Image (tube, rainbow, N blue to C red):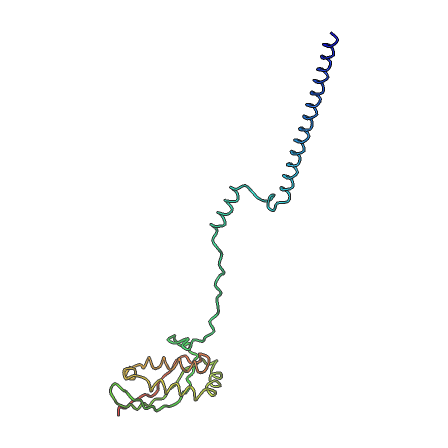
Length: 206
């Protein structure tokens, strides 16, 4: 009897020790699991605050819409710059009726010899040339003419000498007048002349 009671006591003591060990191991596992969960949470918070763009990144759908809107928006190009035209128009006012304030100015008498290769003949051309300028610009024209007189006469001689027979036989001499007007105004640096006039014009074939 005593032996049975002693065995029962030892078994009970063994069971209590086994239960104590089990409880101790369970507590350790719980603590380890809690530590791991806490560590993961800390790493997640650190990544959230440290990684760039984590707080500014929007949902993928919003980012796609922004990208599509940027692609659809046309690129703005710089407006073309308007550069004012500085080149003078030598024929400005050509063909417009006079205002009644023009005055005639003498551009000189000329005698030109011109060779015509098509007919293998030589023409002697004599003419007296005049021009019309606005009365308010007459003094300015005379000053400019005095400075460029020789250049202007040379331009006129070249035009008439290189004229074709069809231009010389034109009743109004329109093309020759236009060329002279353009060259004279260009040489003077300002469109002083409104028109040119032949008071005398003749040519003789030799």
